[in-house]
Length: 527
Image (tube, rainbow, N blue to C red; front, side, top):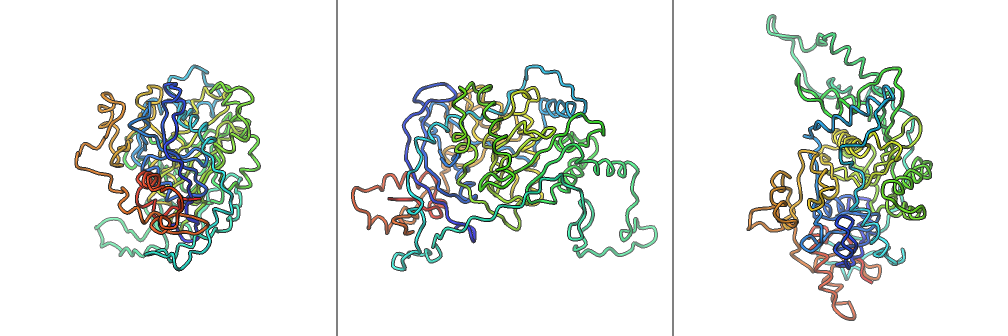
């Protein structure tokens, strides 16, 4: 069931699509997928769908037909909490620090494969238009359920549409480090913690009731942290604690001496007072659009247009505002906030990279209950020498780790699809440790175990247990929830009411793809 106060997801299933042009092997009709239009969707439903191989492009949600499509696309996730920066990643991070500090970077051709194109979504953009819904909003607003139609636990499923939430107040100023009375300083004991330390007996160790002696090195480190946000800041709308979170991550990034440097050691390092450039990362809600998102819309669109024309060779008339809005701004995800969730809430956001007061890159992301899901990245081609594809991916991993401090369940970074049959798309496997989703049993397998299988066959079942099945598979078709003539009802009731030819095969296919849990929570629109 959707969270309290959140409308249920409403989807319109289109079935197996005709073949489309593949963005990888250029086959004109080889790209095969199932698709549905999401009029609205809860973040929990979308989390469960991407854990079954689905992915969104705007409001269009699609799932490749893995054993038929020309280039199978496997959902990939990085274990952000255990992420280890590779040599090439450190090279990119150091290059950015050098550029910000001294302003000089040799503008050489990037050796690293940029994590920027996400070309699976470029292909998705085309069929998003073909699969768009033409159902009116009035048809999608459920009436209260007729008592006679209630079956089992349908009592609470009124499905009333909630009012759109007010836009969060924008906090665009650089965040200041502060310790509120209610907010424990990272690394120090909370005043609310009911732990009493009895004074030790003479000769039995330190007196825990007194402040510990501090090394000069630690004091210097703390002073350095106070300068943390002078030149590099990360601003999240409506949040005052993000700066403290960054300090906390820095302090805990190296628990042992001589441990390898973490991303935070590179990303949240304080720059010299005479630094040549200032980089600020702002997280703004894109759906529903916040005031800061609206205020920067045109500037952001112009960066997208230049990126598409230079990097993807689009003609000047192709990257339209309409395409930009439908592909990268529109989202079916409902904005949600939870007591144990991130400060900025769940939903769809644009992570804007501001260099010296202008946008140079934008990462489109979804913040979900268990992950940050990367949707797309576009950047100003003039700054391609900074390897912004790789840099933004590393920043998004650091962002995931940052959100985890407030939302303990949120600990993965989803990079979209891994396409082994397309060598250019294998770079996503370099963010370790990573897992690939088994396309048959929907369990996660370490990528190291999957790669040998993919060398032999482009389509693979990763789960080697032959008896294992999809545990979330559809078991009771009658329990699928349907929205028909503005009335919410189980499929078993709708089936009796329906006139004309049976649509059971289509509903069965939909339910098998979304799984039993989502099929009982989401509303499947039937005309």
